[in-house]
Image (cartoon, rainbow, N blue to C red; front, side):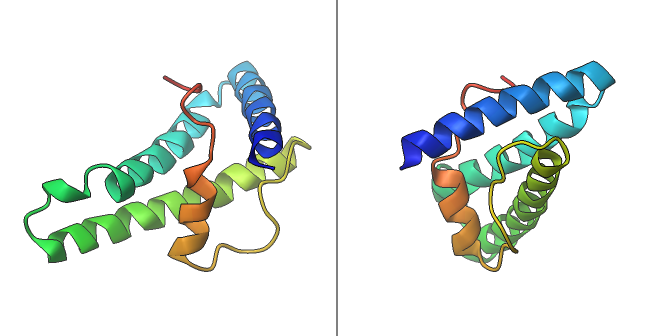
Length: 111
């Protein structure tokens, strides 16, 4: 199931990147991808560097909000260009964001 979704997502990301490059809007997409990557990194990779748990929670919440907004914007961009729809409805929880980004094929894009 995830391979098929990842293939559709990869194709949609490439198409969107090409479309936005053409109109000079690649900066928007790069910021969206960066926000998602930053949240993924702070959530799953670098949580152990924070000595103060309260500081970590506050930082993580800020990154979560950026990521959530970025996913919504990415979904809207996909829909605007008639590409693969990432999800239907709203992102209602941190678990929704976590589930979405765990298998998001971002490693090949915008390096």
